[in-house]
Length: 233
Image (cartoon, rainbow, N blue to C red):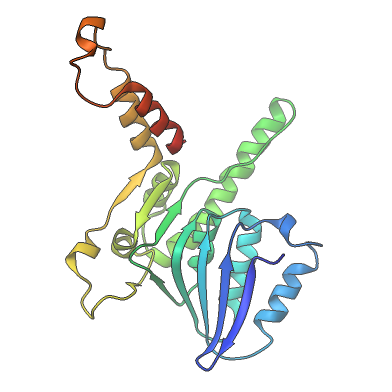
């Protein structure tokens, strides 16, 4: 099953990228990207791309990103749910990028599985480092942020609300707002997995109450904190 879908309306064509982006979902990988490009370029005119994806394979995302950048027509991206990981890279291909006020955007470091000896491990690190640089290229072109800042955000696995993405340049506007974006939307939130995890661990490391004081102890039960921590992981 394809994870893209083209719809045609009176207003033009709309492309929906929905679901996990993976090479193996492209049955016959050497053919399917070509099919995607043929569908994309089957007609002329501007196109709107809706994205709701947790991400997936960065090389598959790179090909979609390039196809959209090469498309002979205006590409408007609308993030209606989540554009995480590789999907956030695709979002950067838009001539204009909009986010729903309830949408989220996430960037993090690429990952892979390496099997073998020490040299294999070192080679894996080298490859991941270069892949990260290629991903930073897309973010830098869109946002104008420094490569170091983007790299740090990826190291921390950074999640952005629509307001924070707008502030940092990952999107151009927030959907369904007045001409002037409300201050509440601009003052969006940004958080990273590392900080949240450390926060919970810090609370868990506090001394446990004695048996006599347990009945009177106030605060969140340690078992509940562990459940929340596992959900974050």
